[in-house]
Length: 274
Image (cartoon, rainbow, N blue to C red):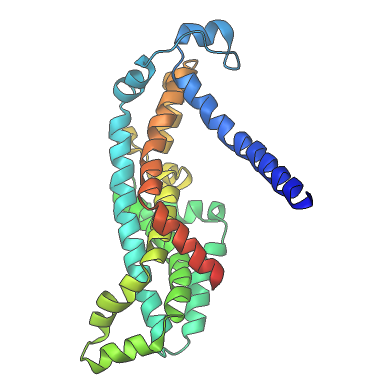
């Protein structure tokens, strides 16, 4: 009876927590389906009296959210690929070879992520402006790669370091060089970690606001998150349209998580065991 009571209490508690977590999301979805007259007459917190999909059309066409989504994908996909590619190469060298001061190098790379981004806004903005890449998507990609590289290297280093040495030695005996071992042996074994980091980095970069408004100025180059701020300025009281734009902006990250959910969970499980 005691175990059943504990199990039942746990499920009730988790149900309440899950509801509190999902309720704001459902609230935004419901608002996005309500008409402007309904929201204006009854308020945001009232029960819906009408439903319409015209809000999504307004967010997609009138606010040009398609362009903002393409800008976000144009930044996120190259940044994720470059970050994980460079981090995996760096982690491979630091974890599998006796490089001098490798721990110092790893700590220095990780220390960069401990700095609050707010204190770096002005220096990075000035640096990007001096290099001539201010207000370009290339600058935003470079910023995300630079800030994520240390953390990704640290995580992948832990996975690669614990791989059995015998696998690498066997590949070396078969005549494989460092590049062949990296591409054909190490990378396949670290696929769960790469997938987990890929899903996380995609979410972080896609939803970024701080660096987007720091290095991007033109409205037509804005990613989707800062574009939602412009949407709020364009439709001051049209919260249903703003909610529709928010739902649209959440679709890519949700799709990525569902696609890599299996690898994401297995990657976290491996990290927990180690």
